[in-house]
Image (cartoon, rainbow, N blue to C red; front, side, top):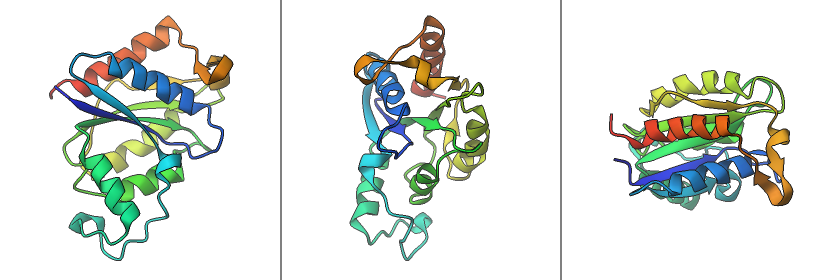
Length: 181
């Protein structure tokens, strides 16, 4: 059973429609017995573009930002990535965050949640990120979840307005990511 779940919000835009979605996912995860869920916002993490002098697979980090990111990722047993789709793909900050590390990701489950303003819900971004996650040794679970028309799910005060269908879908993602393989 997963004890520490990090929900990673992959948009670094000042105003992001995905943050309310990520907060909602984190809140649902936190209600699970034995699961400590934490929201990790890549905007707040603020990683520079990968600038370490050595390969991440060596784990010898010289920059404080990389060492802090390493500790954050290493502390988690599993992840849920909440990601927007930009121009048919996933975000550069998410790719950068993945590429900064290697061993810290290995053999941990990851659930995927995407969103977009359009009708795809960001599903193409999910397909693009899967091989990258596999290369660093993350175990991508199924099912995943895509939220089309994200703006229609935003309520007053930046609250995510979930439908019963979305709640059932994210529950399935959380079930998959918090169970042992």
